[in-house]
Amino acid sequence: MIINTMTVAAACQTTVELASQDGGQPVCLAAVDASGALIYLYRMDGAPERLIAIALGKAYTAARMGVPTAMFRQRLLKEQLSLADFLDDKFTSLPGGLPLFEGERLIGAVGVSGRTLEDDVVLCQRFAERIRTRE
Image 1 (tube, rainbow, N blue to C red):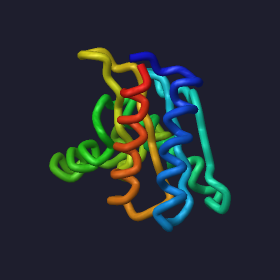
Image 2 (image 1 turned 30 degrees about the vertical axis):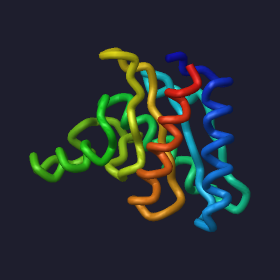
Image 3 (image 1 turned 90 degrees about the vertical axis):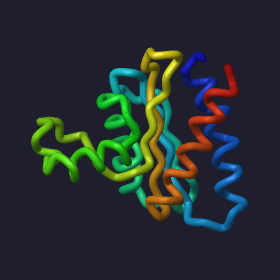
């Protein structure tokens, strides 16, 4: 699988089309490389500007930790940790961020924000799947 701007942009477009048709709130989608650096960002018309930082934070956290942000949140609760313990002010524990792997190798991550946390997770899974199928 290749994660680059063209692959992500095409996957983003189909994900946004689905999100536009379901009548839900507009969202922001972000994709980062394995280090957490931004590759692509898309904000749907009407999506609040604050969603940019949240979607990017979800993708960044998933890339840096190598796990979905929902799992990272569970770890924080289970081990009684706080985000401050990781000394990275870009981390978030909000669900809606997923790492992308090629075999065992982390190649990037995606994040979605703008709806309920559960809906963000579902859209994020769809976004990730569309990237995976555009090899």
